[in-house]
Image 1 (spheres, rainbow, N blue to C red):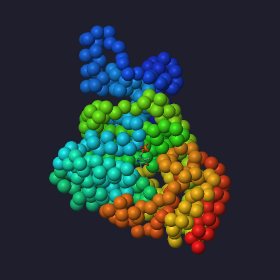
Image 2 (image 1 turned 60 degrees about the vertical axis):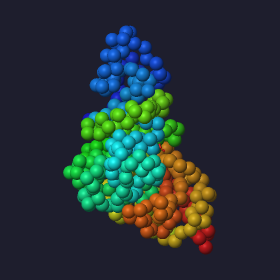
Image 3 (image 1 turned 180 degrees about the horizontal axis):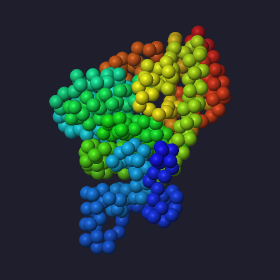
Length: 395
Ligand SMILES: *Cc1c(COP(=O)(O)O)cnc(C)c1O
């Protein structure tokens, strides 16, 4: 089946859901058993054999199974774990792959809170992190130590949008017996399947495009067989569970992911092309543009682009960027992205804390745009007024 067809039907289970199209929200903590034997049997089947059996609310209900099965099918994964945010999906996936004394390699372009977890938390548990140049490719071999257990990628990178050569990194990492994880949030499982490119784990901040409506926080960790036991253990030990209402909203959002992403991609291309034509703009960071340095890899490994991009100005200042952002009408200022609406925030990847392996040398601050589902003509009119404020404030 083609991806658009899978998206509509993945995880649906007419029998399990009494014929109801969308799996209802099961609110549950206690699940009652018929006897001790039944309890022990269910425990064995639910926990050891990973069968879809109701055991205890924290261990999941049909509301969760539907989302898990759908994401597994789209990601090409053995199984999928659900977490209460995208960040917890990143951190629990890492926790499931490393232990004290291990070494972890993380892309220098990683989402900043993931970096914060490695530096300020994981380090305290005796796990050492080294950041690598996102463009390293097979060269990652040279950074692998005998105790390197995992390599964490994110492509395109947060704020800087470098596309990583995931197949080359995965091949080199596997040669030295490390697991490979990828934060796949930008592309969603519809436009990139890291596990098919050689990764062991594909992570989604499902808060973004899967939920798609800026009204729920969800993380997904899709795993192959190699990564499954460690991550299952971490999730179980820490006691992480996703609230059933959030699982429901994520599944509901997932069904329209394809039509939304097509429009995000189309609108983003129009806005990106217009920005490229502007005298204030040095570069638009968006791999779907043929001029982008990551375009060839994007074309090889992705089947589409989402609506998130960076803008680098020729000359800039914090005051000019603030003047632009604070007067926007259709690009409000706020964290996160992936919902139906456009957003804008300032972006400064040249700060010392943000990059260590390959410092960002482009003029900063720039802006990060999420191009939403509005009419692109209106978005461009708003951006034109924003750039006029920018230029005036720049003096
Ligand atoms: C937003 C984001 C996250 C974190 O997701 P939350 O649901 O906000 O915790 C992780 N990775 C990337 C790439 C993101 O953009």
